Image (cartoon, rainbow, N blue to C red; front, side, top):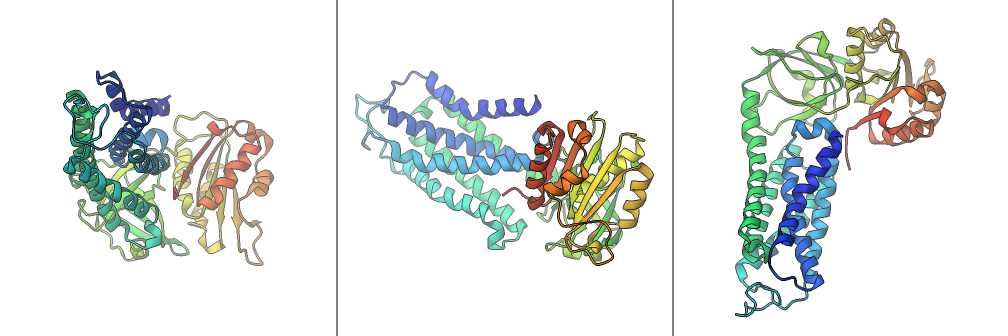
Length: 439
């Protein structure tokens, strides 16, 4: 029910301007003029609520998952773009000064330059803004630079749209609707204040220190943090945080990493980090004692509160990190349910902390199935990738009917595995997944 409440709340907010306009006493215009205005109002409302979706609020992402939240953010942004681009072309009334007998703008559209200018500028900026968001990785921009420009650009577009709406909008001349637009804009602005000022202030009061860094696989490291003068982080196994190491909490140098440690193991946080980008390539050089800051926990890839009779964990590459935290927590809690871990990598050297993982599997009684894409001649495990054929070989019918399945890995693995599990009869409610990327 929690996701449903969020969906209903979202629809209630974005549709509220339309509801107020409909309840007003202005006489209706032609169908096309009303549709044009409605699409413009809906696009603006969606854009303002987008600020909240991108604000990493755990009340939202903790219920539907951060990956789902950000996917919604992307889809709604594109929807708002389409609505905004279409809306001016649907008007049929002529652009004229207001006639004395047409004070409600029933038959004419405004020709006031300021109101139209703000709208035209927003109309031109919005496509570029959305396209830059879609193509960020292809452009090779640093995430930190893009994030700052993304936030400032969104605020600029929202301010232009607010000026356009209040100055040129027919229904926005209603004081109640104008107040609603102002309130939604302030909510968007407050989200930015929270993200760039208040949240960093909170992190500054709860710093962490690097306890140690060690190599645990091919170009893969384990980073361990310990809290400095505070009890640590209240999290569930399988969740993740945005991690900032060696920089001010007000800087934009932070990256999302899943927690590989277990809450029951104590206040230290462990992370599995693979060398991929600018920060990750320097993890091995981080000195113990380096100050760090943590924003989290986020995500809902967790088995806490689930009562299925067995648990299957399916990981690809560094996607083992949250599943490792889950398995460790199950072991420390003395959970006696049968467990299966299917773990795929390209070569054997990429297996994260292979000896410790094998020892944990033996201690907990977990069935461990390794899969390598490029095994050497001495390899005795599975060869290939985690696909439908392997799932059918490894997962028996009894598990498919009742077990919980937890997935984390690259996009190329996720979709085929989810489809294979569904074909085996696993209900969608028993498949928990988290993706590295969304689009």
